[in-house]
Length: 516
Image (tube, rainbow, N blue to C red):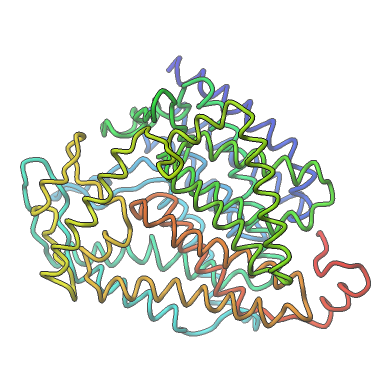
């Protein structure tokens, strides 16, 4: 308890500093009442989590607080994104008499039940003509993917090669959890973000949450001290929770994301959002400070994939922006200057040492493992190409890691093995449809509404970066949640159109968006 109390003090001090510094900028995108409520709920849940001896004590406070605040918030999606990683995901089974457990519950699912589900209920009863109605192509693709998820049972990789068998009850559980974890999130984001102001506020809220985590990540890396490790292990006996991961002699920060890879991915997406959001921030020092903080967080997570993904997002944003050729040249010049500046600091050696294409040799074993995983998976996929091999893990003992697990650190491989090329095609078609919709709307709006076009470009860049980054990560934690958030935001964005009011505002003030 003493250690957790020390960690709590550090977390609160860092968060209080970031929230205070960020408040003037945050109020450009959200009402003051919403900002204060989100901040206070964040603090209340953090204090409760660190002082609770079990997840159930935390849930007893968190559930009613989330429901109350989520209902009062004018933008539930922004509220959801602020609290998405207020604490790490620590799954705890719901005990039920007669069976081992009903299903695991964590902060993600608490938010789904307490924020997303009530919001979805209100949306269904809304007559707002601006929102998407009925099922569209993306809904059908996502539900088709869910049908495969329910139909094909993939036994967990248990010690001793114990195989669990499927049952109607287990199928019903999978269907329910797919609805809660996946479709509900996509539905609420795509149906509730009916204006560019709401989408922009959601992006700004996510940037704020990531700024808080980035400051904590820098602290963790500098002090070699994971702030969320001890209380996570107190709730769940899984020794992998809060595990200290090193790359060379450097600790890889996790903050409240649950894993360095997931943390780096969150920062990369926040950076992509900020490329658009910063266009509505007048203070140059703030624009620069947020970029610097997010990139320091990226470096602290020490994950190669998110570094490359963030760079890809940066160049994609420049390339797809109006006047893309000139902006791409400018972006390249800025990148070269920054690379030269970083090269003159001690960070240069730390970065280069983990990049094999630059001669780095630190932790190249993880790259070799990924290559062997792809080769072995392809061999199995050729035997069951259409719907995959749900028992593939039992045939992949040659790629079992020293930690005793077969780590499918490639989302495309994971989906293909479990659901075959049919499932992989549906999965990719879903997010590519979001990409095409956002790109088409951004391109169409560029001549008349530059701001609306830039909003779409940020979503396009983030989706492209995600498609690159999930090639080097399992589809878990923040990767999964933000994947569906991006899809939902893109679907909502594609439903927007330049309005006469926005074009008039642009002509008179030079901006198509004005702060609240």
